[in-house]
Image (cartoon, rainbow, N blue to C red; front, side, top):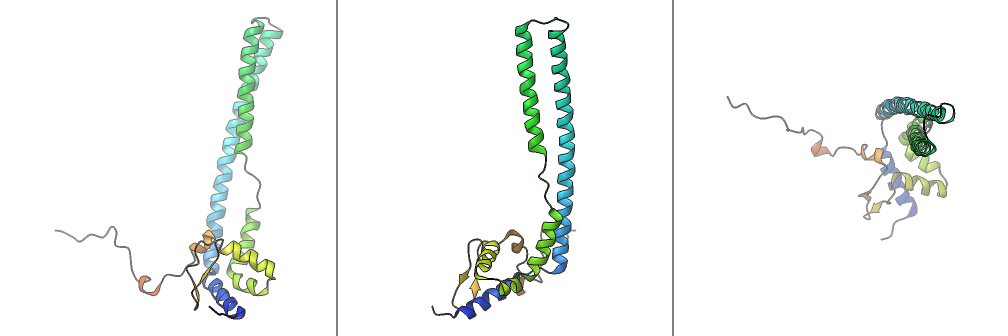
Length: 187
């Protein structure tokens, strides 16, 4: 198959342009991601509060155990060691739980602003990029590459997940409605 580099690149730019999201779609994606991120942060904050409460209770029990052994002398060394080790283990597990619960502070809004700028202008970005940048963009948008049938790019395979939502509806299917839930009246 003999295709000029410029023709192949033009076809790739056309494919990127075809998949470019509209500004409305990008606003919707941004809104949904920010909503989900805020919910995630609120849930994580609540879990951290619960873990801190558990840590405090364990530490207070450990302090009472120390007082019972050191000052009040109401328990023997074997009982003290057994309970102390168990409480220290619980405290360590609670600390690990807290660490696992805390969310990494990401600049989600900054990441979304970048995506909002890059995705709708992917074809322009491609045209202005160096070879290394083009390879990076192709890997980003089409991790498993693209297929060329001699006439155009077909069956692009795996794409960036958000790009899967951008594929246009084919002409015959765009006027169809899913009939699930619509049954004829029988009376």
